[in-house]
Each structure stands twice: as structure tokens, then as C-alpha cells.
Amino acid sequence: MFFDGLKVFIVQLVYFIIPFTNMFIGIWISISSLMATTSNRGIIDLNIVLSLSGGLIFLGLTLAVVFGAFFTITLSNMAYCDGELVAASGLGIYWVSLLKLAGWTL
Picture 1 (cartoon, rainbow, N blue to C red):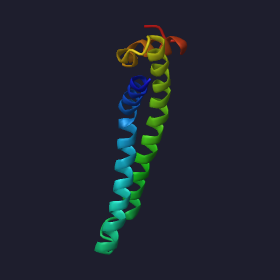
Picture 2 (picture 1 turned 90 degrees about the vertical axis):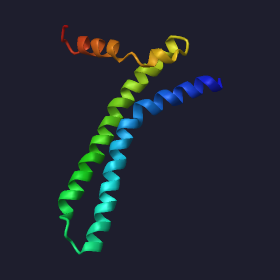
Picture 3 (picture 1 turned 180 degrees about the vertical axis):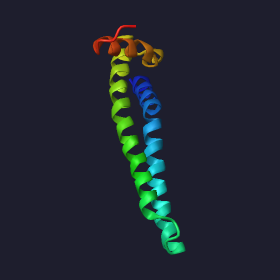
């Protein structure tokens, strides 16, 4: 049971590292820009920096939703394949299935 939970943790870490990196960079940019504008008395345009960081945070949240859907799909496939860690990495099968559901043929 411990090793099954460890496998789920590893798969979740792999799938959510990109969205959390985007959100972290966006938050880091916004905090550092606030510190830079207070120390240099407004040399950096605060509106541009905050809009960039807000865009990165929004992109990270959007990617987290998309990756969360794929995480759910791959986790159920991993459970179907008796807990094989390799079963959670086959995204090519899911893309083909999703494109067929959307009406596209390959």
C-alpha cells in the first residue's frame, strides 16, 4: 500500500511540476517587482510587470486544470494496469482517443 501511494505521488509530481513552476515564477516576479519599485522609487513600470506576472499565474492555473485532467486519466490507467508506473506515461494513446472523440481522424 505504501508503494502504491508513492507511485501516485511520483506521477502527480511529474504532471504538476510545469504548472507550479509557472505559478511560482509569476508570484516571484510580482513580489520582486514590488520590492524593486519601492527601493528605486518607480523606475520599473509596475503595470507591465504585474500584468506579465498575472498572465504567468493564469497560464499556470490553466495548465494545472489541463494537466489535472490528464493526471486523472493516467492514474486510472495505472490502476487498470495493476499499478505499473509505465502505464501513467503513455499520453500518445490518450491524444488519439481525444482527437477521435472530437471528430478528427488521423
